[in-house]
Length: 133
Image 1: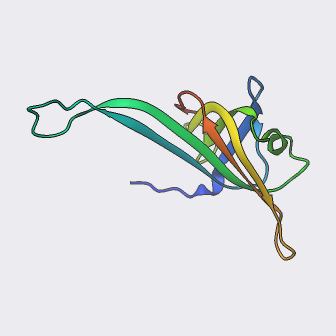
Image 2 (image 1 turned 60 degrees about the vertical axis):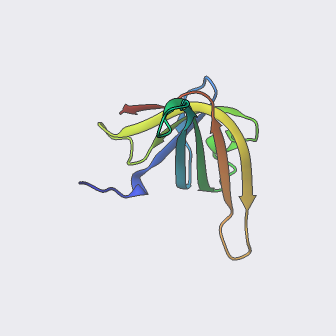
Image 3 (image 1 turned 90 degrees about the horizontal axis):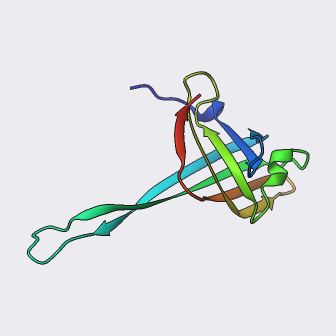
């Protein structure tokens, strides 16, 4: 089984309906997906049983803040955005995830002996598509 490093990962963002472009200075990103279950057990069953429910997903990223980066500027709280996440790069045959969502948080921090950093969270609205570049 092959393993990969995250150093080639790419995040692309656009204002909803726009053309996605690379977010600069990304340090890390996380895609979290989960699914609800709906219990359908009845009297007489000896074990609980479930049906598939709805899914929910979030995207978060950590960046070095760059006030000149147009894609970072798009990521204001409440902004509706389209995204593409490429965990291992954008080359031919690479898997990526895409969808749209609402920016739910933005945090910018700095210290006298460090870089100015920012973090963003996006609540995905609808399904996430997995495809190959």
